[in-house]
Image (cartoon, rainbow, N blue to C red; front, side, top):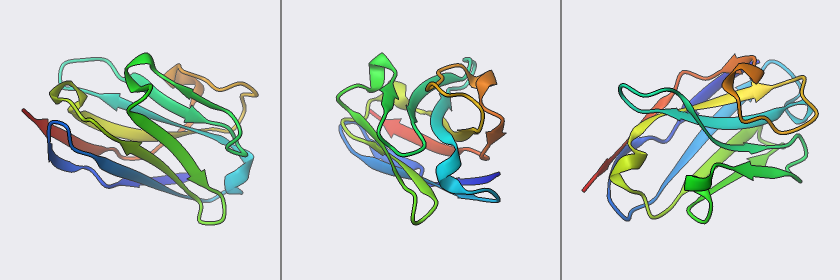
Length: 124
């Protein structure tokens, strides 16, 4: 599986961004997908995950009510819509694929494939 994330950029606090992650190399609907982020000097943390069909979703507490994960299996793309952005959301955002688990995973080591990351900077 190859993953290519895009959509990051500079945004003011309170603004919105939509991240995209295009996948290739394996039937898109056969694996779950997640978004993680890593701020400078911090560990990578879970943001959101979506099941193969899109019927199950899981969010980190900080993402609930502000971020929305979705997927378009016809376009082999997963999205992360981020609203009400805060300076503490500044990080590199990574999409990842989990081809084996039956449940949605929050731990990064459960994901076998990773995109290259896209940088989100939120100014105050």
